[in-house]
Length: 68
Length: 263
Image (cartoon, rainbow over all chains, first blue to last red; front, side, top):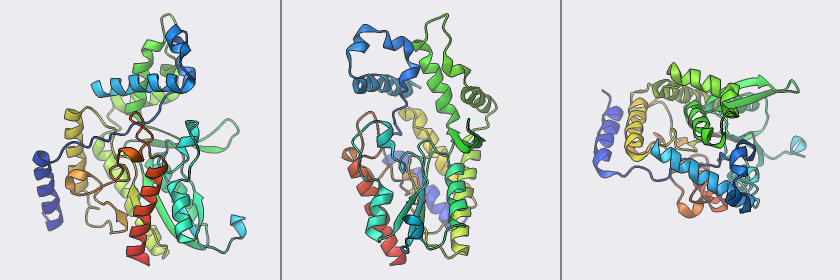
């Protein structure tokens, strides 16, 4: 094993105990308004602004991803 | 005007971290890191990035452009998630267009959308070719992490080699976290696997210091554009893309590294 690999492998072992998992996960709006036809019929959902609707859907997606 | 400009050119490619993602979300416009960096370096900016691009698309757009362009001052790929797949396909007008997606996310997204389609209505997401291809990839483990790491590192090394052979100044940086994030337990294990694949790669000591943040992953001492941003550098809690401050931060890091290597 070369020195570089040995050093990195050691770092990786220590990081298992010392580092927290990166809290900043890759999140982005995947919300596509046309895809949520059923949700658009919901009365409460309809009252929200377009931006708020986006956030509701996004939050739901993020929650779903957290459980996966 | 760019065509006749005598100034050197900054050529970049990447995904939504480099393209105008804010415009796709109808957010207030702001300057992106490539424009900010080009201003600091007094260069013209050619931004080839597109939201959703995979690393194959980033590598190809950049390589094809730099070998045909004169007066190149600096080249920067900002790499994306390793497991994204990229296909160059003709669109409805017959023009070649990159179609890129992450099979795992495509399948999960379609499953999540089931609840928006009440029977007998079918989930239209699951009828799309992108979903069918993604399922096939997933079922046959064609998007496995080891292969994805190998492919992406090959692009990184190839780009470095091409730039060096043409005497073109270049920097590289990872934009997003290299793999799709999961809940903390699975995420931790996947990060570990990712790091092991990078350590075992034949490129580990061949990628040069022009790659900012190499070896990319935090647990082996690397970093990405994603990991250098704080909360106030992001669009919001639900959306971790860089905002105006985030783009300024990224351009600052790249400018400093450019100064260290080339000034």
